[in-house]
Image 1 (cartoon, chains in turn yellow, green):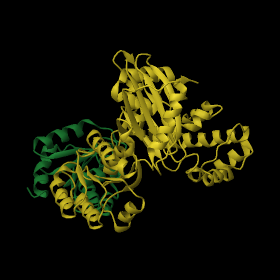
Image 2: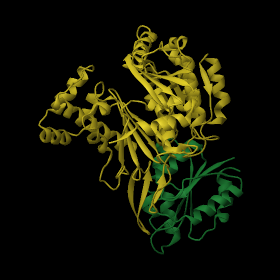
Image 3: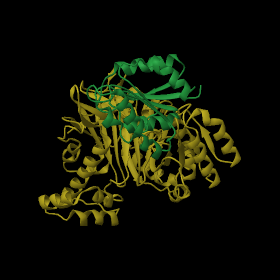
Image 4: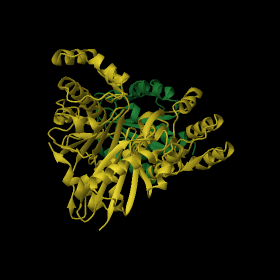
Length: 460
Length: 134
């Protein structure tokens, strides 16, 4: 028998989940405010006390591991050549590694763009450009620009392999903090994620968590092993595919509405699902994550307003008799506000959550373009076809506390035949907030993790 | 090794000839980037930028090639690959028109070589060699 403790250090809460491998279940959960500004271990110890209280005894854990998204998470800048190709590939790699992509740059970068890297306090730069044997002029130019500006944060080179030697020289010349991985797009439209993702994780664990003051928790526990979004991605991947004799749920979508961002995960085969489409553009991964930095319940509430047309706002105001703009601005100015047992506020939270889901899904999902050809009507498909998705899983505070989470989750659906949204999914709720925790457990015992996931994600 | 971007432009899904061109060019030592059927001008141009291609070879079999190819040279110039060699071939216009006139129109549009219907790819090879300075 083994007992494991997982810690999710979020920007607001530090959440603990204790697991017993013999019972194949969660034995206790607790949470406390994250205290990364002072000493991250204070919040952890408080949460641990609460956990012991609910267990009624102090128990010894065989392993204590953690994931973190505190202190702004992992902020990355993706640089490439053509926006639809290496830029998009670099961006997807960052997102798949659990990062926030705060800056996306293409072609020759300029001085003000390099300044932005500094201003936005980017943690890691992913520098791509050119297929293997293709364009090397652009990456060399960009590496020089970064060097001249005295960029000292880690730069991962993931571009044309033929330019590697030149890049190495540039890194040396300017004394830069450089790393090398495989090209994120070795051939046109071929996406190569694993090598760059592993390096991002390695740097995150070696440098970034230290710089953010999270590393000190490793005096108390075994290890911080993942950025939180990557942990969620791993849990979703496991839940979708299954492990050994434990079947997975098949193709699923998971969404997490937070205060600052809305994260969308889809686990599905990227191949065409019908006869009349031709796939276009950069290859899609099975496990895809997108993050909408302008859609959120608090910090990004004003972004939600900008994402809506005037007509949409009027329709909502009229239907529910509210002033949506006022409500959104209020939430942006009072990011700590909580609404307890107020039916009207609960309705507004549900409406805002629904908008986040609707817009985030629209941006995540594949789309069709009609083409009248000599063979009749056919379609170009860019992105993933999610029409056959079986389950949509909701996680995050808004959904867990919503009176009627289905009302928010069902906004993933849509009727436009050219937008490949889920058509008729079932809805599951992560009401015990265990997805990120099970992503961590899956690193130790995948079978245990999937059994607990299947037990605790409840159909609603 | 020189890189050539190939594909079938517009709402055209003739896939067989495209495969043959792909095969023959590879056999003759070229690095081929095939953007496939139903490709836009941007698909060709983006692929050429990233792969540092020396030539774009556009196929069109369904008669609408003239519409689909308009402005392609200008877009290449705009995208910073204005010097790239542009070839086009297939049934590139509607109906049976005088090929010399057709050729003239495509040359004016900025294409370096224009090939008549039923020209096998093997017949293009000497021109490719010459234009790529081999």
